[in-house]
Length: 57
Image (cartoon, rainbow, N blue to C red; front, side, top):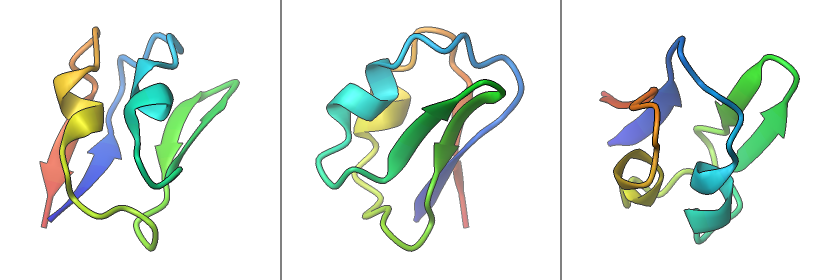
């Protein structure tokens, strides 16, 4: 399972700091998760203050 960022990202950067594989980048429009790098650990979603990260199949 991989994760994706939905609307509501506040650009806090917590997800990127907690990603063990560096799959997340923070841009002007919000966080982006590279599905090729994501290992599905869920650290990003657990640490997202705005609850903008969701699991996708």
